[in-house]
Every structure is written in C-alpha cells, then in structure tokens.
Image (cartoon, rainbow, N blue to C red):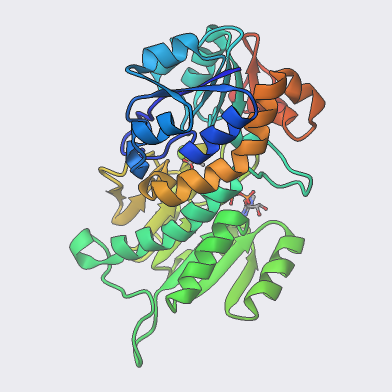
Length: 360
Ligand SMILES: NC(=O)C1=CN([C@@H]2O[C@H](COP(=O)(O)OP(=O)(O)OC[C@H]3O[C@@H](n4cnc5c(N)ncnc54)[C@H](O)[C@@H]3O)[C@@H](O)[C@H]2O)C=CC1
Ligand SMILES: CC(=O)C(=O)O
Ligand SMILES: [Mg+2]
C-alpha cells in the first residue's frame, strides 16, 4: 500500500503522523511511504532523514492526497483537506467528530473510510490511541494552569505549591481517567492541594490507592462540584464519554461561585468541552476570560511538545496502522478493537456513539 504523510496544518501543530522510525517500519513491511516536504520539520526531522529510510518526498500535500491509498495524520482534516479525500482511500488520524458536524459531513461526502484514533479500543477496555496524548495533555494541563495563574498572565497570582507558611493552590480535576490522573500527579508534584472527581466508584478506589492520601477523591455530582470550585485556583476538565460530546459540568452560572481570576483548563475541549463557557482556542491565543474566570481551551495541547508527542503517538498507532496497510479496511472487520475506530465509511457514520451524538 502507498501510505501518505501530509504536513499538519492546524494552528501551531508541530507533530507528524509518521516519524522516520515509524515510516521505516511500514517500508520494512513491504509498503511505500510518501511524505510531504517539511512534514517532520516540527520535530527537527528533515526530508533527508525520510529519504534515507526509503520514503519518497513530494512537494505538495495535494500530491500526497491524490496518490496515497492511506493517509496517516495527527489532527482532524481541515476543510481544504476534506475535499482532497476520496472513496477507496483510508484516513487514519484523530477526528473528534461528535462536536463537529461540518467535518462529519465533509468526510461523508468525500467517500473516504476514516478511522479515528480516539475511538479505537483495547483489550482492557481503554482507548490505546488516545491514552498517550491524554498522558501528555494531562501533564501539560498543570503547566498551563500554573502559567495562567500568574498575575502577569491575568491570573490570581497564586504559586502552585505555596511556600512555608502560605497555603498552596487548590487544584480540582474533573474526570479521573488518563488525563485526570496525570494532571493530579503533576499537581501533587508541585505541592498543590488536589481533589479528583469521577462517576466511577471503582476508578475512585484505584485513585485513592494510587495517591495514598495525597489526593482527595470525590464522587462527581453537580452539588459536589459546586462545593469544590468555590475555593479552587485551577479546575481541570478531563471527563470523557467515548464518542460523545462532553457533559457541561460547570455552567456559566456556576462561574459566579468561583474566585475571581481563577483558571479553568478544559482538556476535554476536543469533545466540545466540559465547561459551558468553553470554546476551542489555539496555542497562539490559548486563554480568554468569561465573568472574571480565565479559560484555557487548546484543542491540540500535545502539539506544543511534538517530539515527545509524535513518538508517543506513533508507538501506539503503529500496530493498527500496519494492520490497515497490510489488509486494507478489512482489518477493521478482523480486529474487534480496531472496528470501533471506523467512524466514516461509504458516506455514512458507522460508529454508533458518534452517530447518536451527531443526531444522525
Ligand atoms: N485538548 C487536548 O489537546 C487533548 C484532549 N484530550 C481529551 O481529554 C478528554 C479525557 O481523555 P481521557 O482522560 O483519555 O479519558 P478517560 O476515558 O481515560 O477518562 C475520562 C474519565 O471521565 C470520567 N467521567 C465521565 N463522566 C464524568 C462525570 N460526569 N464526572 C466526572 N467524571 C466523569 C470517566 O469515568 C473516566 O474515568 C477526552 O475528551 C480527550 O479527547 C486528550 C488529549 C489531548
Ligand atoms: C487527542 C488530541 O486531540 C490531540 O492529541 O491533539
Ligand atoms: Mg461546549
């Protein structure tokens, strides 16, 4: 199969769909790899490194889209990319279709078979192609929150860990999955006072065990969230209902309970966000303010650390990508974990949760 890698074009997105090392694995398995010139520049991998492992470099994304049997990307295709996709072609990337009907329609009209990283499952029931980027985003969320808390950035002026004699910041993490756990780890590491919320009692038990009393666990209801956000300095949104839009756990009215110039970091923004007042922002302009509360809602947080992220993502996607390259779309029929990854096929949304969320 001819596997194509266009350069990412989302705002400040520096990751690449295939690192030279990953491309080499495809070539080793008998496939050919076509790379747009400069696709690896965000991770300091030049065209020569791709050529050295046997990839072909082409000048334009158009040529990659026109010739490749399968496109491997990182972020969802942008409008000028949808129109270049076609029937019989496979697209393997993050899609996050539930909150994005325009993209869903664009992909349906193109006829492409699109597999979304974020809905591929694993034997343990987790989301193995989302997990590595959730680990990155969870860890970054605390850096983002700490940065936004500084007065020169518009925040309250609280130091995460406090100092002897002065209380540390209070961090509330909504959702105790991959993002939430990594956020809690970083916040604990900086010395913050941390509370983590989930609806799953087994998960809260695991978290309680994991943090050995250093993090308080709480069952997530509107009432408990209202209590917790009153004295929070940073609230991290890290919930996920796979394939669906995120529930709005903090409404605009609830912002009135919060301390002036405290910070919301909505990592769940790629699924529409779990704060009512969230809208997606970019690395260029990551924050905005509503009712005195700073919002950070960057939808591609891992793009800011592309070296770590491209390798972490590539490690996880490689076996599934190779299966698709080897067997084509039939790989989805053969692998029960890859099957839910198929979101769009023959002009239809074929993942039930995604279709339901879109109202299709
Ligand atoms: N903005 C960005 O750059 C990135 C965003 N993400 C997003 O972060 C979100 C979280 O991802 P993961 O941690 O991997 O998901 P996960 O599935 O590991 O964890 C989600 C957790 O939310 C919990 N949950 C569901 N409803 C809840 C509620 N009402 N209250 C409290 N907890 C609730 C679930 O029980 C689960 O433990 C996803 O939307 C994902 O797409 C992930 C990576 C990068
Ligand atoms: C998960 C996701 O949307 C990202 O890594 O950008
Ligand atoms: Mg929303």
